[in-house]
Length: 250
Image (tube, rainbow, N blue to C red):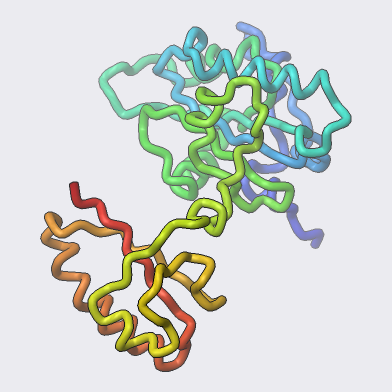
């Protein structure tokens, strides 16, 4: 039996070609492989059928970006395809779900997961932790790995897509030249460090954890001593392991 491609596992073997949808519920389907095999970046757009988004700023910007990339061609990074996953928000606005699904896709030029694939769409929403009623654009690499789970925010900030696909900056770039403050027992744990400015690039190569916490948070205050104990245990086996504390204190 032939092994399924990652995009077939995520979206199924057939997708709706949105521009073929009509009021009579006729539409064409196309092989998921034919749609996504050449895409370098796949956008998974989670929308909600009982929320009217056709005039929404985000979907208009996404449509403009999609059309522009499709017309440009030539740029490998901009071989961009969109698969829309139409959900139903949990509120009191009930109606004809299938009709709303169809109407939310009409006039769009990309593709969508069929209405009947309810279990598949549920799995997708759980996989990417989609909040009910919050339209979300997830970007995936050519191998199906995640670029970002909040591309809708990036698109609104950068509608021209000049920095598309908005890959996260490497941490060494984010923390370049930032002076780190040593913890109270840092020098007793790190005999090789002198009492000079410590920057991220000075830390030895190894696994690093970022601990986001705050003193005003009771669960954080309870967890921090436990983490400190685990940190010391791990460093006995992995001496280059480090934790960088990121305070949320005001």
